[in-house]
Image 1 (cartoon, rainbow, N blue to C red):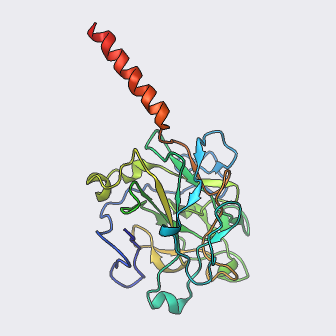
Image 2: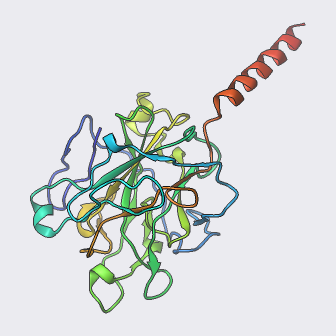
Image 3: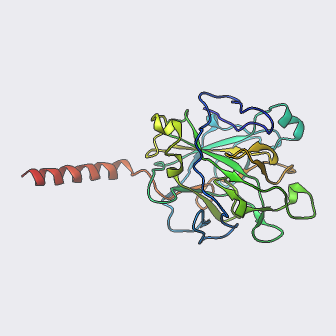
Length: 284
């Protein structure tokens, strides 16, 4: 299910959709973390070398990935940069689809304590902390590859910092929450599956938070036409030059790092056997 937030000033539309956007908003008040702030109480950045990561996304699903104009022309599975592609104003007004990219995992993500995974981009601090030059993306998760639940997000910036135009400007990341790309290169943005407990797809059982097998990033052309969960216009580096849009590099130390992983089948079987043994002892 592809669900994209509408353009500013229009009703919410589904570009290729089944179902509706969630009507609940699971967000918390800021200010939020800066580009490299690893101690923030709400959404601390996580360094790529942190020991909290149990596994990393290991493949980009080509059947669930499509680059927009000005993006990559082919998928680079490991090491290279995959740019989702930017849209100019006329393309946005025409309703052209944005770029999106979907990754899979060795075992998957489960809903554990605190943040369950983190997403990395290559933004850089400019002109100074807490301002970051980067592209942002919505984050969605799925268990079956068809039904995707989107994280509710906040972005309240109304201007950028810098003298070279919006495409090279910096945006205050303390005003941004639950959007991929809000932390600097080498630092991941955390996502907690608890935020999706009230999503209709989770309530109906279409998305199992104990077995997330797909994470999808949906590019946000940052001219303000695309909205956060409270209908605020989202601003980021726009228009970008060259190969534009959100940039994603698959691999360990980049891409998507899993903090709470689905147990490997062998481990799960051993836990089940251990549980049965305990029950037998109690009955004896």
